[in-house]
Length: 225
Image (cartoon, rainbow, N blue to C red; front, top):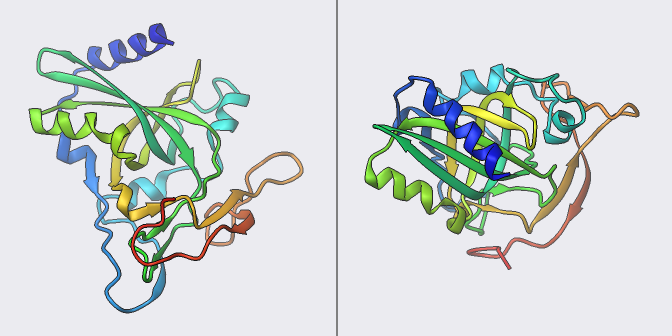
């Protein structure tokens, strides 16, 4: 695995792209409950919307693993919890390789007595990686290094560049969701697939979900235990 990571980082550093942190990483903008209970469809930010619209909604990590090479350069949007980060530098450019645990989300923002807005399913399709190449300040580097310990959730947009070990996205846009704004302990659900194993798409063009389970009643404050 170490050899694979080294190879991916080398590829990133060999491409002369000098993106800035703020052009790739974006804060979620989720806010705490302010007295009006509501559930709203997720609306991507103006800068995020083109990436969302361009992304193929019917491909997940298990699909990439089953059909090696079929999805290279496909625009993808996955959501994942950061498990590990490797940073390697060459002159003033840093290659950042994230390992994330992919999760499902129903794309509903839930505002009530709980702090969390995003009810992510504990279900998912395993790990994937995301590669980012950019210039980092010391402060930005520390933010990234803290993400695994902080259990940061990332909305990842990018293109598949490798599937030899785990699927790897070359990131184009990343939205950061702090741990306090999501929970995996309230609802459980999975992606619906047809008899051929293909992901079902709903009338709105999104992924159809199935096997819903209510795990707990959301309480005031945090719902992590």
